[in-house]
Amino acid sequence: MTDATRSRLRALPSLTGSAPTLDPGSVTADPVALFLEWLECAEHAGVPEPHAMTLSTVDEWGVPDARVLVLKDVDERGWAFAGTKTSVKGRQLDVTAHAALTFWWQPLVRSVRVRGAVVEASREESLADLSARSPAAREGVDADDWTLWRVVPTRIEFWQGSVDRRHVRIVFGRENGHWQLEG
Ligand SMILES: Cc1cc2nc3c(=O)[nH]c(=O)nc-3n(C[C@H](O)[C@H](O)[C@H](O)COP(=O)(O)O)c2cc1C
Image 1: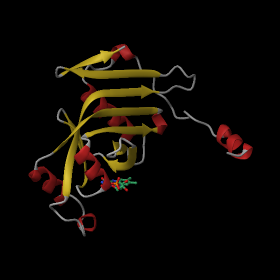
Image 2 (image 1 turned 90 degrees about the vertical axis):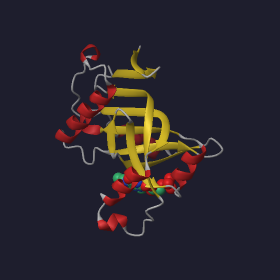
Image 3 (image 1 turned 45 degrees about the horizontal axis):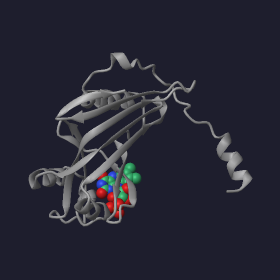
């Protein structure tokens, strides 16, 4: 990297949003509810496409891969996303059914990370997702190929950045089906 590039990057501001204060003691013990609350805040804060997220997978050699997708649903079953089974991500998930999701909501200086096993939804759910897409988005997609998956999280991190660098990180881990706050 040249000095000019380094200087340019160093001069770019970061964590410039308007960060709400977050008291870790006051958050709900249910990470699904907390995620939905933060998603709603992101919508209200005018985050463009707050449901866009990075899906990270690994290939057959364990090398990471990542791309942007939209979130389709969130509930106690997991974080849902969709695509074709014959895509690179679909083939990677066939081999290693684990993934991570990353959200970044800049105006709120908030990020969420979700990681866990990936399970395929029923064919009915996948077809329902496909039929909810616009005709343009359905064009050329083989219905048998379209697949809805869910990340079933074992770890969820909520990160509230702060201009003074006193960032707050709330991490939930799931053990024996129960969410625990990690220190
Ligand atoms: C904002 C945004 C949303 C996207 N949503 C999806 C999606 O929901 N499903 C999908 O398969 N690809 C989506 N894509 C395209 C993916 O980023 C990616 O290019 C594609 O899925 C192929 O990835 P793969 O080769 O790793 O399988 C989206 C891209 C962007 C920028």
